[in-house]
Length: 100
Image (cartoon, rainbow, N blue to C red; front, side, top):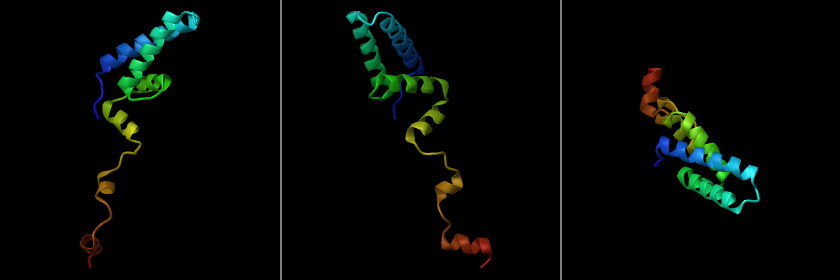
């Protein structure tokens, strides 16, 4: 999975938040609304989300967490120990452990 540089994500997130504030202050200004929507779309593309709010949340999470933790969260799978990754013991391993 390719992820954008954190500096790039931070820049686009700042831009999105700036235009969000401007749009809330002047909701009837079509130029502001259009630029806000464009910044949201860019954030969606960067973060691989379909909704600008989800993309902004994902960007904030991405920026505040270590990369490994972020990737683990995105995969939806909890971290597994080495023993859990190995799977159940084979018949030989079972007999070796029990002394049979």
